[in-house]
Each structure stands twice: as structure tokens, then as C-alpha cells.
Length: 263
Ligand code: SAM
Image (cartoon, rainbow, N blue to C red; front, side):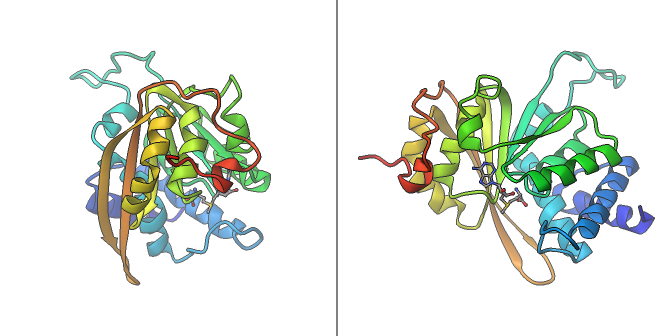
């Protein structure tokens, strides 16, 4: 870990999100960056390797979920005025569908260590790398699971077991809702990280959201500048208000080949 990298990460997260992180967490993020860059020489993990661009497009972007109202509070165990945890039984289970190189799941776990995180992906070699990250950074209450979302969303151990489901850059919103909402508990929420076209995708997904037991929550549009561009982002919150019908998710590639639309 290099001190100036940690300092840069800390100041950028503070500047762009108003979030203060301590030195240990900044060091862990810097170590995670180094591990990705090293592994990227032999495995395709990310196209973004420039450090400053990486910090904004991967770290700040992953943590931007705190822009959704109530999320930051939900990610931390409640404390009293003297800083003691008042209800240590509260456990927030979060699954990152299609985590790839660990985004947004790993930065969320580093910055919010109370979270119980599942990193889910259909590509085992990326998960093997993430197991090395978990080991090296000594992260607790975080695991990798290998599988396809459309299969695991039907399994009893995974179905409607998560308070928060997150996913970034995996699929268009309509099929993604069919993959993600079955994992979410009633009363929980699915938050999809989208680029600038998120609003359009949301219009197309309205029928699917309702059919799958969801309800549109907060939609958060924001931009951040990097040297190369102004980056547009949309966070889409979908609240789980009813159990998902056992019809979903459909197998045989149907979420993609025949996305849920009103007939
Ligand atoms: N979320 C990461 C990010 O934002 O950098 C990775 C995005 S990458 C473009 C998409 C990832 O989703 C890949 O690692 C892929 O293996 C995984 N994926 C795609 N379809 C999936 C499915 N049906 N079930 C589980 N993982 C899936």
C-alpha cells in the first residue's frame, strides 16, 4: 500500500460523496486497486487502469449508492451517543449480482464493514481472484458464490433472503429485474447502477417491476467529471413490496429472449 494513493482515495470519496473514511479503509481500497492491476495483466478484470480514473469510476461509483435516502444508515449498525452499538443483532445481507472484479460489492464491504456480503458471478476465475482479495484484506462476513442468477434465484437458500440486492453493468433493466428481484426479501430493495440511459430503461421495465413484486423507489441521477468526460449515472431503487411469483425467474434464457412486457 502506498500512502499517497490512500490519501487520494480518501479525499476523492470525501469530495464527491461527502463521505469520510478512515485510514484503514483507504489503505484497503488502495491494496484492492493494486491487486486488480496486477491480476489484470493475466486476466480481463477492467479496462480502467489509470489510478485517478479508477478511483472515480470504480470506487466512488460503487459507493454512490449512499445517495439513495436511508441507505447509509441501513449499512451501519445503530450506535448510541457514546458510539456503542445499540442493536448488534441487526444484520444486513447484501448480494452483488454479476460482481465481476468486485464492483460494487468489495468497496461497499470495505467502507461499511458491518455488511454481510455475497459476491455472486457466473465466472469462477473472477471469484477465485476475489477469494484472494478477501483473504489478503482480511475481510470477514463476505463470501463468493458461483452460479447463474436465473438458477440461484429459484433456490431456497437464496430466494428472498437479501435485504439489499445490487448490480452494476450486468444487463438491461427489464431482464435484470427478473434476475435480481427474486433474491430480495419483501421489505428489502434492489438498487441498479446504470449509466445515463437509466431513465429510459426504467420506463420499459415498469411492467416487469410490478409483475415481479417490486415498486419504483428513489431514482437518483447524478454526474461526475473525470479528465476524459462528464459521466452520467442513474441509481434506480426498486422496493420489494410483494413476494415474487414462483413463475420467476424463467429458465431457458427467457428473461433475455422474451423480456417481461405487458401483452
Ligand atoms: N459488476 C461489475 C462491474 O460493474 O464492474 C462487473 C460487470 S461485468 C460487465 C458483468 C458480470 O456479470 C460478469 O462478471 C459476468 O460473468 C456476470 N454475469 C452476467 N450474467 C450473469 C448471470 N446470469 N448470473 C451471474 N453473473 C452474471
